Length: 116
Image (cartoon, rainbow, N blue to C red):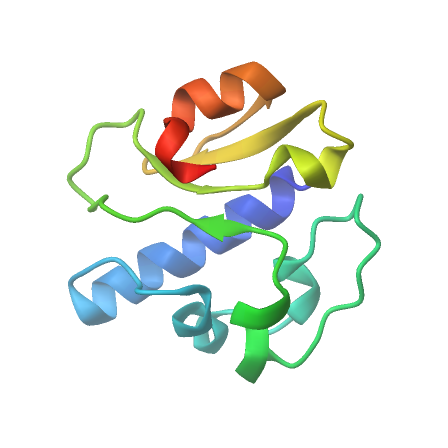
């Protein structure tokens, strides 16, 4: 699934925050830290990656806002929406770098209804 991609994007976020001392404003800010555009695509969607300069327009992943590197370890950094997995659930990347698969209901519980 997309666990490996989310981990790579988590490393990119860490590198970005070291250079900029804050969380990236959007996925486009991570493009300079990722060489392969396919990292921004959930393998289950079978979407073709586009240009890294337009990654905000086509990525399958969603960058959460309101976190920092000192947030608690259960704070969501990024996620793959359940729609990419046929509605069965999604993968969530946490601030400490671990990724968890959650069922559809648990995804929205972890993210909070405001992020749907």
